[in-house]
Image (tube, rainbow, N blue to C red; front, top):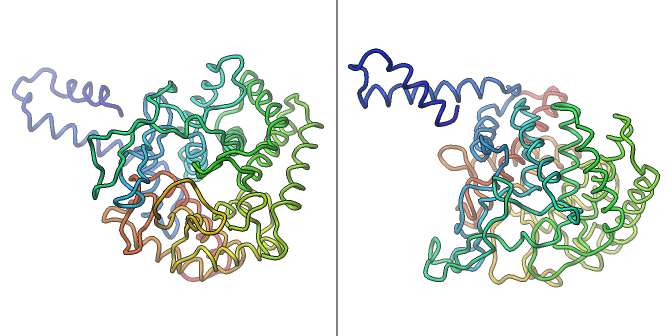
Length: 433
């Protein structure tokens, strides 16, 4: 129920008796209407497993980051909360990232909230329909109404939390090339077509155009998921998600009978797969590297099995997961990569905390690999770092403090996914609650 509906509800309840028109009665009815709305919304969920309370809290956080008017979803509710207190890693997350929102769609579908998933898919298709004829790809992010927003600007007269500078509004990543977002979008569209609302012909035309563009452009450097400011590279994660984009488009065409250049799409999907196996696997290091020619490992590789690119027991994946554990895991927390080590310079000064969404990805990968008990131990331990109302920011610092913008959608959607998979794995093995 939005503000206008709440107001109408309260006015109706007051009609006919002027003695009821008191501030206390108005407040009481507003509280009841609000409480009833959220009780009803939570009751629609179809997850009732071991971590019902924590997963419900996370879905509520995602819902509160979703625009009731537009259906778009923002990455976080804040700006200026630093990833490195006193440092420059200060960002504005109050926008709709295609990547983050596409993963949010999956989380909503997994918890039974198909209305929110459908609303975003409609909003997403409208962005393509509103695009200019020469715009072959989606933008990285949008304002919640789908329009342009202020360019990244430093507010020099302000200081952030714990004197962190600069304080920025807007986000320069808007102009970056992030090829991976097409994969996240296509995965969300594919699952929404199966579980929410069937894809329209006009939407498919737009999708097919974008996939044709990807066939010509996947083999180029970009800034990828972490939006690095150290220069474009051929990132592993972008390759994986380009493969996902083509794979989901091919599946949609085959399952729905949509026309498309399927032979070309299959050819390019296979080319990407071979590129990853031949150029991103380091035989000496025994793991998939962050980018072509590099030696660093990156926690975004944890999505390789989660997106269906590689098997949970594939020897190359088992070795890569082991390397993640050895190089990026600190206690129960996971760094996205080691900042400024060796050939891994992201273009920013300072350090950062562990990325909590990467911690949840790691937990799910452990469970998928068969180490269910360790996955459960790490999951419960990571949950203990939530604040007093069960919410997470983007990162966890060395003393357990929350770093970065808050609450972070990516963290909560990763929690939902890991918790649900782990719950199923425990039940399958017949383990006690």
